[in-house]
Image (cartoon, rainbow, N blue to C red; front, side, top):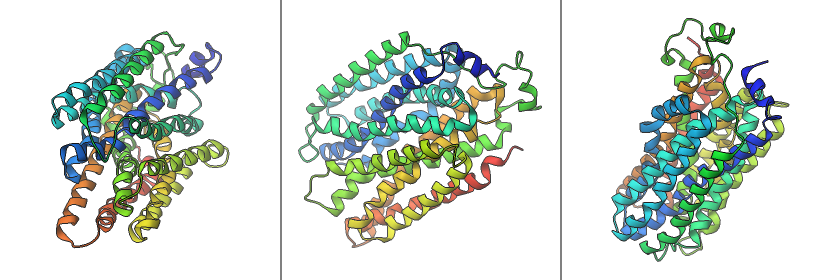
Length: 416
């Protein structure tokens, strides 16, 4: 019996801890999902270019590369539960900073508030993702992460809808951000207090306790550094690419919809990508590992992602816009499959490896920002419709999915 099984059996299974972690994944999704409406809102409020507006996602995700490794140190020092508690208070501080940002009408101040919220998100991700991965049997890790993904992506949709109750994209007033972000900060503090009292057991991966686990040496061999695990390092790049192509559809959906249907109410389009993602997660829950292994699932969905990206680029905008939802479906099983494959066999290096893997999440800020720069450059160089400018910029999907296909078929197998 593994350390994980022994620990979890003491609390009669891992259903209750997973339910609690599901709430945390909802919060993570909400924090990212609000960028979908903040991008066009701040773009109108500050008269930003497309590339400048995507600094919103860059500010959120840059925290992952800066605080990814330190977050791992927090987990090693304090454990998963207390690290989650700290994450909520940091995220709440970021939300409160939106109020003075609006008062001073300062876009850089907004970016700072988003960055601090991103720091909290980084700390939370470093704790919850390995926790879900190792709390149960390894072969069903992707299924558990799919369950968490439903909570996460539901919040991607609810985030813009919640802010849409307070913020008007077409008539942007900075003072409107005060009430919603005070509410979000209050909820985050309340959740932090809840986590402190919640029954969350500490868990350990097989081989993580080198001194007490006889299997540790067989897992890690003679390796003395986390940099000696190629499948992890390639997995970091895979996660970087993946989070970029996962975030881009959500971050750009409203902008792309506005280019296709300039006079329409855009709020409804925010649900396309989350619906695709949640549909994919349900598919993963039903098929992994009973019908599909985590590896086979990753192969299939990466190929689908490449196919749907081509549809987005080449079909007319009024039809291609639905491809963003299909890309969401393809993306759904990539994250759940990368995590268990990338941290497999790390033994005593598991927490360190997980924190480095978290740094790959910065791709969610970098790739949308590159997309924004491309969209602006096409706008200046070509006398074509704004819809075509977006579709030209969506070519960034192609090399990303090609690398993910490589990792699915070969990269995750490289151990030396």
